[in-house]
Length: 154
Image (tube, rainbow, N blue to C red; front, side, top):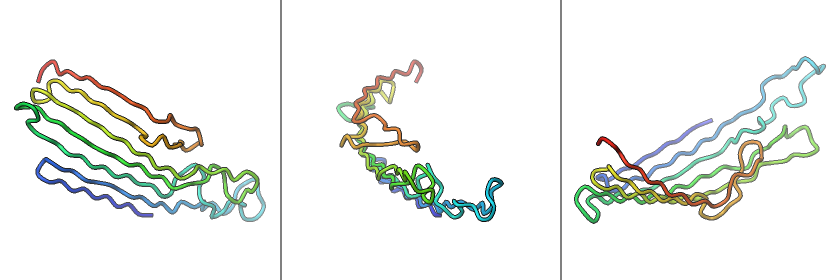
């Protein structure tokens, strides 16, 4: 397998980054106690584990936005997972797979008085795509969040 991770920042204003991971995960157990001969799932791709996935993020920070000591941060993130099997592929029958997934998120955070007060707005899964976990359970669709934060001593 392999993993590539890249990040670029420009003057505390712009940040870009992402990673891509490929895993060659095959069953290497040639013999199993309950079978005579070679295991029927020998060299199969491991189930319930994505083998190709990645993400990307970009953010822009505006310092002293509408006042000294305030900041506005706008960010975007993308999540990608290639389809993968839920069960052993060579077992036949129901080769249920978890489909390819692509999810977009946006975030807006406004900080006041050097970060003492913060207001965050977020939209996850902007495109309302069907997103699943490793066991084929569907995750929630599009969701909106608001976050208020106050530091008592800053």
